[in-house]
Amino acid sequence: MTKTKIYKKLNTLNYEPVINILSIVIVVLFILNLFFITSLTSSLKEKLLETKEAARPAVLQLTVIQASNCNGCFDIQQIVDKIKSSNVNITQVETIDFVSAFPIVSELIRKYDIKKLPTVIVKGEIVKSGLNGTLTGAGDALVFTNPNPPYFDLESDSIKGIVAATIINPDNCQNCSDVSPVLKELKSGGVVIKVVNSLSEKEAKEIIEKYDIKTLPSIVLTRDAMEYSIVKDNWRNIGTQESDGNLVLRYILPPYKNLATGKIDGLVSVIYITDSSCKDCYNVSIHKRILEGYDLVIVDEKTFDVSTSEGFDFAQKNNITLVPTFVLSKDAKYYPAFYNVFIRVSKEFNENLIFNAVELMGKYKDLETGNVVEPKQG
Image (tube, rainbow, N blue to C red; front, side, top):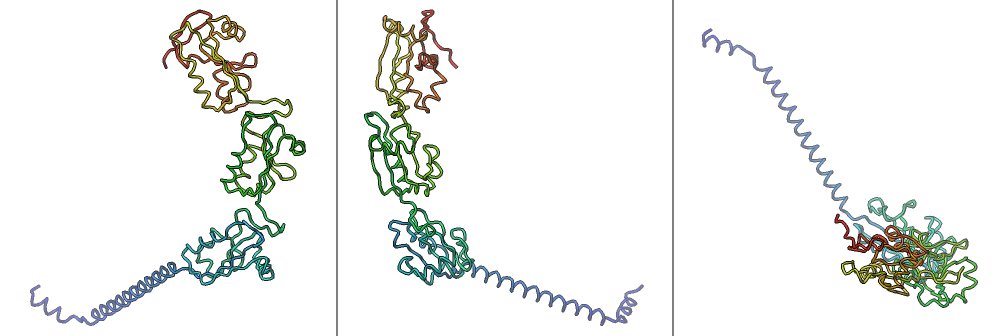
């Protein structure tokens, strides 16, 4: 077909329907594009509004309830300051006292089921505030429900967390341990101890009998000590809670007085055994430095040389065949941290504890063979 015929045929075609269809498609695409642009713009506006709203501080009103009859109680201001430091706009802070404004306060206590004072009630945009991790939801408000002791307990109408301590010291025990650091530790952990009484064994006779105390010194704490987590979580490791709620310190470091025997437990004697004829043997004084690290109360120290008749007789009577070594009196058993380790490297004979792992220390002498032994390395 020639070009002329093709041109003639094209000229005879009707393009109007095609143009109409293309026009419709263009219009539809324009409308769709406009819709998407409008939707996107709307979505962006929504996101911007949401972001702006999220950044806006929550508007809150605070009602602080104090208890003027609770001197030294928990300082609620630290909770108020914590709330204020959040992303909030505090428009009102009202402080009222439980005693002087009792009619108003009692209604708030009933409405929000408040058990302890002081407290703070937060109203307003409480959901937006994000304070539900610190405060407890109560209807239209958030309430601070867990003040540290001391606090005023509304159910018992009394102050909780004021502790009195009684230290009971044994008579005639100059070397007995000091329990006052226990009180210092409790105070550093936040326990409020208002009164500390110190009694002698004789003065505390009734208390000793009442709580069946077996060893002295000891401490008796009033029941409010259990308001503190440091006491509640740990007291079982060092003492007991009695039927009246009071706490008795029972597990103390030696030396202490055994009230059943009247003796002082934990006074340790040490005898070092050497052999002056063994110039290459390890220095027995090493043991003294090790013992000092375990805080044993050593009241007597002796040294026997097996080259002398006295030292030889002592070694024979106590079945000692390897020297140098040392012997501890039975009171070393009252030091559990030490004894649980020492029992692995010693033997018990005539109630005494005799170190027998001499190969750990260096060269030693076998008294049965008369030979100096050099331990194998590794």
